[in-house]
Length: 134
Image 1 (cartoon, rainbow, N blue to C red):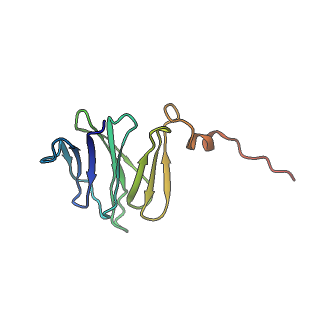
Image 2: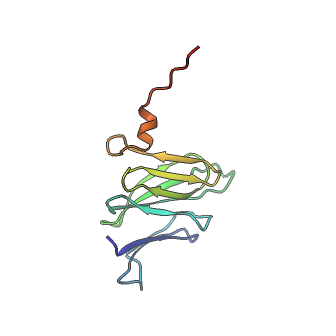
Image 3: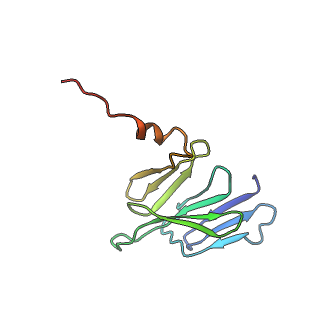
């Protein structure tokens, strides 16, 4: 919308801001561990949802998560456990409608819904394996 932005920091919070009023955030959500200062957040293509990842300490046995929040109701709408280490960068692609996350262990994952996503990871998921000649 051009006036709303989100911030993420190592204090474990995700904050939603309005550029016309920077004295206080529109919303703040806590209990989102972020051990790395580059932990990201991003908006859905229509701006109605903001997503961020969480961090986990190595060897703790805990799984990192993606947390989704409504920018309209300002409430948490979903939490999704992901494989690997702490979620660091993430991108919700505006045209493909797919979420790409990078983990602190160097792995990357693409999350998509085949009913609303376009192209991208769908090309890989629907192609048949190549036939190999003998």
